[in-house]
Image (cartoon, rainbow, N blue to C red; front, top):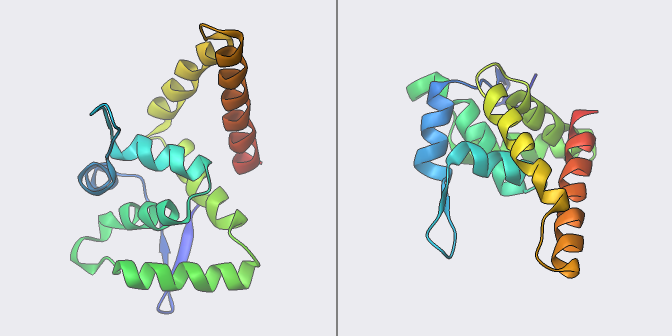
Length: 150
């Protein structure tokens, strides 16, 4: 369970409709072809890559259930920095955030579908080089998932 102490008050990160809505509003991403990745998927994939700014984004969304009492981004960043100092790094923060999303009842099916959709990647590609590259990317994502769920 993801917990963060902000200004001496402990908060639990929750995966809710408000999380999902805020993620789509603030953290959806558009690629160079104009394809849009929804906010949840953007956060999920970037947590797999240990993106610090997406760790902040996770907490921004995970505290959306608090409504007008939600801490500011600056307060969230300060709390994360304090945890990094106390924990000696970001590993535990990323594990908590990723597991909250990956194992939540709210996002479980989306996460499961994501991993199922990646399976063909390990054997796909038109050329040997492309196949090698896809397999490498697939393995890297699986390794990140394993690291974040142990």
